[in-house]
Length: 228
Image 1: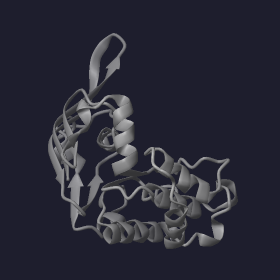
Image 2: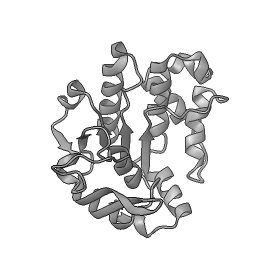
Image 3: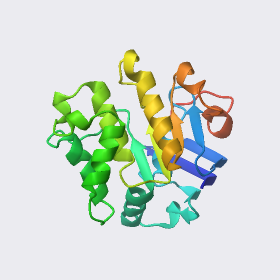
């Protein structure tokens, strides 16, 4: 379902050799599989997720989702593909402050060019325990409620793949497990594959498959580096 082959990414440096961030020979995630990516700070975890999600263009290699190679798509086409097939839960939520929880979820649906589905949006908010908060804007919600709204938004378009970048990092410890349970349960129920980045031993221990990025990213394998 997700297949990366020979993916390389670097960033230019003024007057210096480009800074290599990723050199991943192969990474595969099967349909419905839930995988954790771990690694020390600066080993390229967020860059990897952004490359998979089409937010960052890679220098070379192949990033295939459902057999479609995102590296061969123009930026606008990548954006449309991501909106339709990939959900993204950001560490910093990325909710629009002027919109209610319901409007944030509905807005995520509009990027596909299809009509928004208020019934599904309300159903997702109910699933994450926020049916009573659907008309609240982010500033009127707790941090945990904002992240739950972000989970609902990520699932709005029935994606085949969900990317979660440190989804519990900014959530208080009392609600971290709730976020993980929501993500795992929702992905399992809807047959969505998930690739989740975390520093937490407690979170990683709950997954059957945990990949250490230092072991699959040849840029940092066996040596420290400064990466994004």
